[in-house]
Length: 102
Image (cartoon, rainbow, N blue to C red; front, side):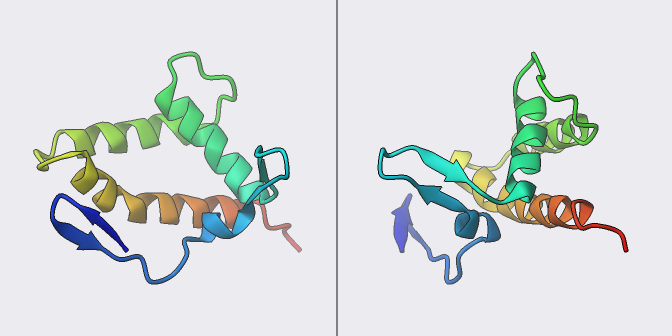
């Protein structure tokens, strides 16, 4: 449990992406989940003006993130708390997108 601005934020279960990120003995982070790799390319495109990957979902994520910034929420912690469900949904979208069609 973490205390942020005098409020307790408890995360009772691990987020899907947390199960796919591992530290190596050298301290580097190793991502094994292909959905996380796709999600990171989408986030990169939404966050960086020089998009390296051209994922079509990136502009939509950028619009959503900018919208959260305009909601008048009290601080960055509140914005992040509200955004987490969006990233959970985007992770699930990426996971399903990579499932082979039978």
